[in-house]
Image (spheres, rainbow, N blue to C red):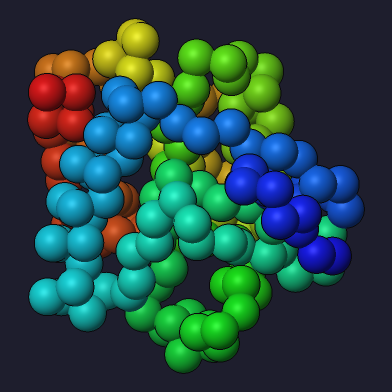
Length: 170
């Protein structure tokens, strides 16, 4: 399915093009701070690849292609990527920074798509609440809600990655 050349970004959700609005300053800054920290951790350890908001993940067996604000793919999967095409599977870690126009229901539906597609860990960052919701496969609500005094943990997905939540909101 080709995307319109109209200046907007699109995700394909179950075969339907969904226009994605650009992110405001806070959301893009938060995503950049966290992506830089992930990249600085992942690259020297050869743990995999970190992608930004333009990285398209096309889920196998579905007409769904999502663009997480930050994605992570484990090293074992990187050789499966054709560098000239969308990534042919869901990210192992998906990070979404919520924009003012997005609701909790919108984000929960997106999390379900990621988890259904094979994502192992999802972080939903709420800039207005200085909070991060952590989701895992099988969850129907966030497993954890982390605040300023807490640490993000890459768990088994990005082993050893720990980052203060306060830093991404500074």
